[in-house]
Amino acid sequence: MDGEPAGCVFCVRKDSVTAQLRLLLVEPSARGLGIGARLVEECMRFARAAGYQQMALWTQDCLPGARRIYQRAGFQLAGQGKHHSFGHDLVEQTWTRPL
Image (cartoon, rainbow, N blue to C red; front, side, top):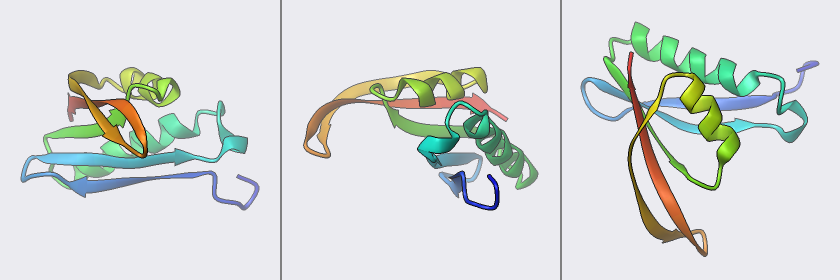
């Protein structure tokens, strides 16, 4: 954005048919501009082109902005559970969608 990085996303192999979306980050100054949705769409496009059939991601329930992006992109909640990480009691969530 104006020559500066505005965000990033990783696409990694989970297994032979599943790509995993990892580490969606959007700079605070760029939030609300649709950059997160564009990064998720690009990640899915890349995974499709690489031959994957589905995509998964792992997130926390305390990140409602990210979850809205994932839901709008067609991801569905596949499972969740309590865990303790980063010094906090959290609820992890796994989301999936076909490509």
